[in-house]
Image (cartoon, rainbow, N blue to C red; front, side, top):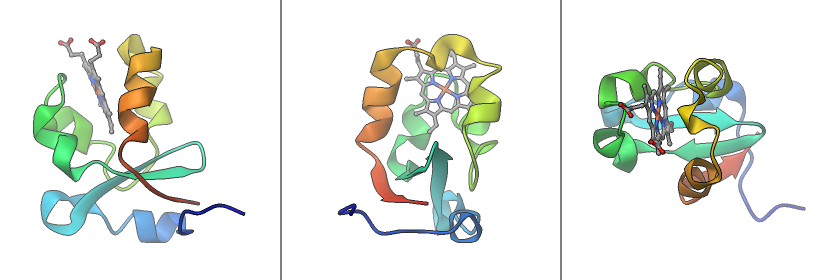
Length: 82
Ligand code: HEM
């Protein structure tokens, strides 16, 4: 079994702002990207549209994320699994 804690989508959804931490999911992985919000090349405001939920619908529209280095960066922020 995984060495990461398990979270529900409801728990992820409680983390939608820097004050409450900013969590997102990708596949079944959960990430706390709070410390990346202000560093996002596309801007904090755009990243926060996905706060508390899945990245896929947004990344489908912004194909710039479809590169190995983006997933490698995201992996650094993993905190759990669904
Ligand atoms: C660019 C990461 C969420 C919109 C980028 C780049 C990275 C990145 C690394 C630069 C890629 C490159 O140029 O090679 C992330 C991460 C996210 C996230 C880790 C979530 C945790 C989002 C969301 C949106 C978005 C939700 C839109 C609603 C953009 C846009 C750019 C960009 C428009 C292009 C910026 C430019 O080059 O002018 N993102 N992103 N991103 N991202 Fe994100």
